[in-house]
Amino acid sequence: PDHLSIRNGHLYIGQHDTVDLAEQYGTPCYVSDEERIRQNFLRYNSALREYYNDVQLLYAAKANGNLSVMRVLAKMGAGADVFSSGELHLALLAGMPPEKLLFNGSSKTTEDLELAVDKGVRVSLDSFDELRQLSEVAKRKGKEVEVSFRINPALEVPTHPKIATGLATSKFGIPAGQILDAYKAAMEADNVTPVGMHCHIGSQILDVAPFGKAAEVMVDLAGKITDLGVRLAFIDIGGGLGIPYNRETDKMPTPEEYAKAVMPVFLKGIEKLGIKAQLWVEPGRYLVGDSTILLTKVNSVKKAHKNFVNVDAGFNLLIRPAMYDAYHEVVVANRADEAPVETYTVTGPICETGDILAADRKLPVVADSDIMAVLDAGAYGYSMASQYNSRPRCMEVMVKGEKSAPMRRRESIIDIINTMQKLPWHEE
Ligand code: LLP
Image (cartoon, rainbow, N blue to C red):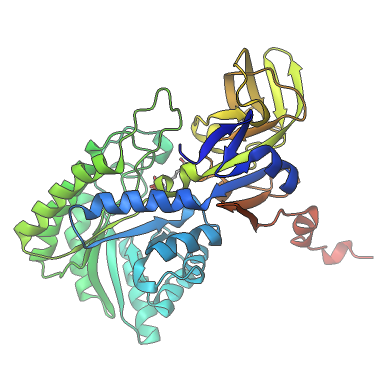
């Protein structure tokens, strides 16, 4: 990608030598490029707006919940798909207006529903129980709340089974046979008005055809829902466009191809119905995935069953390889122009065999104290990090032009200790 380059043998992000950044901020450390996030947003947004002006991007906050990242997107006009009260608070703090937010989730608490009602945020409902509960909450507060239902489109998608979310068997969404009843119930429920439809078919999808199919399912259903008397203000077709983690083998669709698969179907659909609904989309990974690298230092190199490179970041900080067998490119940042001559397996410091960041990669000869960069770590990287093995989570840094600054401080062991409480019967 354009924001990564090799100069004087070192990997650069924007105008910054990653080896210097590692020295300045310490490792492990996530580094994001603000300009790249902007570019990604612009490209996605313009691809869709080529066809239709009433498109609203709702950034999937789960991909990267750093407030600075969300502020950048808020300034560009993004709203957010929030999946918890925490993400809702962050989106509002980042300056996203409530009308550009959708509170998603398949298992919301009463407190979640109360927060949505208090803040005037639309809710995407995932069950009849939730409809009843939300109606009760809104009634109690004397407020009105607008809703959509998350629809299960029952579509097979080509991605890792753990991130295919719209299968008939998945936990998300209202199944086909119950959708009209759900909208009827919502029309009858006190203090609730159905105004939208929502679905999400999965993540890291490498083919645009399923998105076109999903759009088709949604506009077909829109007809039936409109027939009930529902006035649809928005149709939200979720996120899910993948990115090329493996630049040699991944043939990833562009936002333009995505738009071409989705927009004509959507436009034809709403035209036929004679409605003027907004199109909402919820990209996460595409907007932030490639904007960020994870810098990690080599602690030791060991020749054993394999050539192991032991680095200071593991699945505590980037769980995608361990959890989804995900591929992330790794670069030896201080030997970025040396030829790959040895095969290495890059492993983290976690006490588990599965703590592998990259398996069997051809790299230049690696030595201790080298700096490695794990690429495309901006989506579902820090946001899925943990404190496993009592490891404090790392720092996040943003670069913009010549500037760089931390956007989240490194945790310390004190942060971890401070959440624990001594038991009264262990005092003295
Ligand atoms: N909207 C909804 C309702 C979602 O559930 C998701 C992702 C998105 C939007 C954003 O999808 P994206 O554009 O980022 O593909 N942790 C996994 C990905 C889980 C995605 C869950 N839902 C990973 O690291 O690959």
